[in-house]
Length: 185
Image (tube, rainbow, N blue to C red; front, side):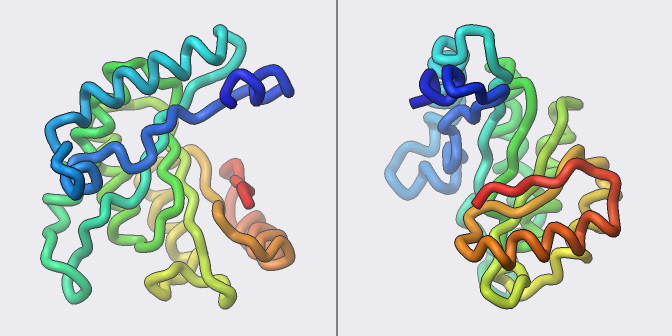
């Protein structure tokens, strides 16, 4: 599949490391496999790209939640993301894609976790509901401003099925930033 993306002209592909973090893998008794799986998946993605496309490290929400929804601490979230980011950094990814974010607090923990181990570009994209707000009810403009302060390199939306909502939301965000915007329906 990745080879076909490159053959079709993609200049970047994502290693299939979405969910390859300690908390998500722990649900299957595989919490100790973050580094092993990450290194293998990035290596396979590099091989598939044939050197013709950048390879990004894909990172998802980790499945832990802060109060009042869950019991995790901000530092715990940062540690989970830093561990995965360190493995992606070791594997030699060209950039980090923090996708399908649903909570500004978790997205901040993810960016800080990545930044604690790498200076490579960080792209952040949220998913949103039909109201144009994050799944935790947050405002995307506020998320953009907050994450921009952390030095992200791109911002946008992914997994949004309503293309009209996607278009108008990105138009609104474009008026606020000079950052590259991500549109990944």
